[in-house]
Length: 417
Image 1: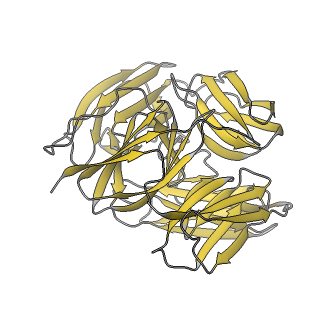
Image 2: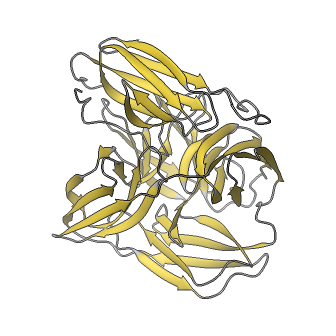
């Protein structure tokens, strides 16, 4: 039976949990915990006493060899076990081939430009890379792979069909915190994340000036789990923050080469736990020049970056369409072709009239047409209507970050039917 499951409080929802504090040098490395991507270092991950060891932690960053450690015990309730990796730099370049089963999934490396599988990445930096794959009707796939210097490696992303799915609504006090589900950036509070596989998910909230909040949340089929979190002011800080805005929004953000999330309209991207010192910040957006700057981070302070991106010439006779929905995670069909999940930016779509359908289990289909002119950017924002009694309308009508499962899916070109 469908229903609403509220979860309130300022502590992790896991209850009497212990914790793993996962850190690395350099910071900002991707972390896989028991085959689940949970974010970038430093990150705190809660563990219930009922969880079964051993636990395998892999810490990896582009340009470095991965570091894997097994822990044979659980932390006691309230105890924190520190997992630290001093990463070893790698050299040279290699080749990464990504296929998917079934074929045709959208794949990304280190949160960058999306491509359609099978795809070959030539001359990619040797060392560790985060590989993700997405396909309508299937659970997202994520893994960390090690590209050998001067060699080649093939990854086959075997996707699991989505059967039972549910939804998480996330609110916070104060609002505007960035939300990550299973390590993937999903927008800012208040927001709704739909189309999540039933089972446990790792939720992380980040906001400048406040302690990160994390917890394990259970998603049940056809139900909405509501998180209402009171964030705690950060004191005695040894790290700093970066507060990032861009014009236009929707740019992928990298710190020292590691993907962090995307900028969004009306709510800057907040990066927490940044080590003091100078960092290289890069913003990438299709049809715009990369924006790179150096940022000096000081402990307990916030470095603000407002980037104005410079456009490059887009393909003739095409425009850009930005699509968001509340809840997010809905399948998008344009001209009867599935092109991804919300929120999504398509940087090059032929000018003219197109049909769009936005579809999410438990909600009425949204159907409409839109007209795109050469050089124009069209924004489509949809509040889906629930078909399930007792499930409320979306908690917020705010614009979500223009990303799909934490990345901006882009196409080499819009292929003719």
